Image 1 (cartoon, rainbow, N blue to C red):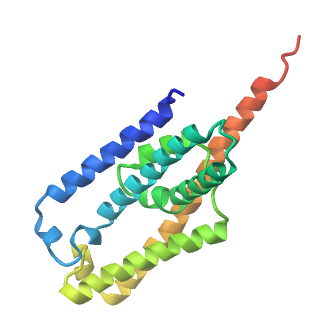
Image 2: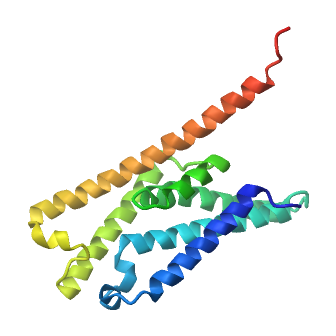
Length: 204
């Protein structure tokens, strides 16, 4: 079966992220050689998240092509698990974390071309809070070990201001999660309405 354009696009996006990651790691920057390496920067973590996400998208597309028409219930069950993982990653990581970088257009294209089922709001918000707090603790640990903040401006503000900043970023991530949920619903509710409008018999 021939690949549809959106499937080809996902492969191209995945390859571009892999290329960016390879080039990023090849850049010799002093900060990359210190404790934590590239993994202390949210930009690098986001690139890895996007590469993993689109890798899962490509794997889901391939599994769908191989499963379609086979009648194999086990393959269909595995495909559903892949789709659930893909949707969870977009909702909890790819969209909220990706909004702060230039990868957002790719995420919006993905949301437009494929329907994604968001997890329950409570579990989704709990997951994004876990990620946010985990990264904040990681940044604090890097400072504890090296005596330097990952982001230099944190050196110039007091402990109280840092707590407010970290709390604000966690709230922002929650807001971005909710934005993605609303945007996803809007895109597919609008498309569903358009399809229903087209199916209505034209009045004579």
